[in-house]
Length: 634
Image 1 (spheres, rainbow, N blue to C red):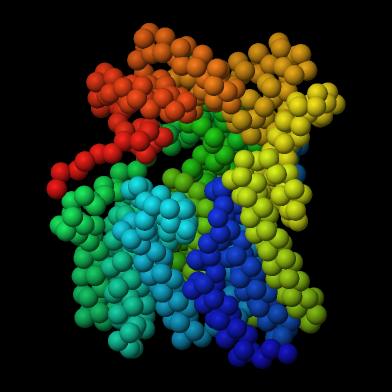
Image 2 (spheres, rainbow, N blue to C red):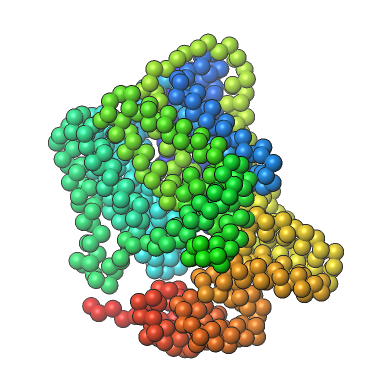
């Protein structure tokens, strides 16, 4: 039996392994969010063990440790599950991943509270987080300044934004801000007793600040300059002033560090800060608001956001209620809007209640400490209002919950006798075992599906070798059904085509994508259902108009072969002559590149830059970049 001492120590070792090794795991993949990203599966393996240790502690001590805030959070979390049972939750199964992730986070908070982690062990855990941030910061700097073309991790060396292991720059920015905030917490605790500890904090804060700018994330930079004044009252009261001055200097140096490449080699200077225009986010929020107004009480149903968004966006543009499109939207880049559209008022109320409980817990100590703890969580909270960080990175969610548990442990803890000796221990063993098997087979699925897609999507044997497709369920089904569609077209299998249509009809209700529309039209025409195919194409063209960034006409023409693509070029050129819009030029250039007509593509780019000088550049057409060499003056 694990002793009391060894349980806490084991927790620290597992946590350290997760932060120093597990979260940096790399495996080739096709992108996405959640369990589609290999490092997230590895993180959940470690997190399940951490949860298991807390449950074993309950069995060992036969006591339950809790407080009012923890109970309140649990009640609110249950409230988020209720819309799963609404009558409109046809696609509720596709919301289970985030609901289970939410429950796992709450269970982690519960488990940490059960463990009697000493102040010294908390300090050690915080140093581990700082070290993990340093590792990712160094990796990001390597991506931007040392990796070469064709590197084994597949990083695009022409990118102006670092992403670290996360494959998403803004997520990296939020993660490294944890390093700066945790360094401040260690300063406030006066937990720096050795020179190497001070050195680790200073180097990490310098590198993390530098990386904040390399991510090109406005959200990250805004958060950086907001958390510093929020932490200041508590820091100046509690920190060693000498250490604090050095720390502030390290951050200041990090702010100026991005200009260093310009001093040594102007050819390597990268203008990272900037990012994507906020117009897309405004469009998503406008559409989400209109959807919420239509169904404020019950929402549109869990799992339905993707399906209802695109049709609503097209209709609102046609009605001139909004002006703009955004595509392939599975999340509105605002967590409150997401829950509001899918679940209505109840989830929003539950989320506000959770926020109120945590903020109240922060302020129970003093206003300065309350602001300080709020500053630690603020970057993640701000990021949740502009993107979806917890879906991109499980480690951000785990850290967020770990720090909430630290806040809750500062409250009065109630200890109650809990005589169940075996049940918590059994779950403490079963949860990690099940999770590790599930995630390991999920990694195998990612490997096989990535192989399948990168080798031309023709070797169906790779799909048959997948043991557990659940982490990539939709992608797996799409690949399998597309393969069956091609076989049915080749062999004229009418029943297979009808089966594909039945499957795609349900898929399009949940996920309106150009490739889904195109394949459906192909199947309809193969069955001689031309009128239905035309109606399908019309709907797709309404959702993905040719004058916007994603064009269904271009996708259809590209998939249709060379002759179809050349017909598209003639039609699109006529549209350009009528109305020379930027996206029409971009589609024309991309189509020419696809056909290998590089010189006409370059000529078209020159024409576009002449007519629309401030709206089109080489960066607008990445497909053309490899064929153009730009001489930078030395």
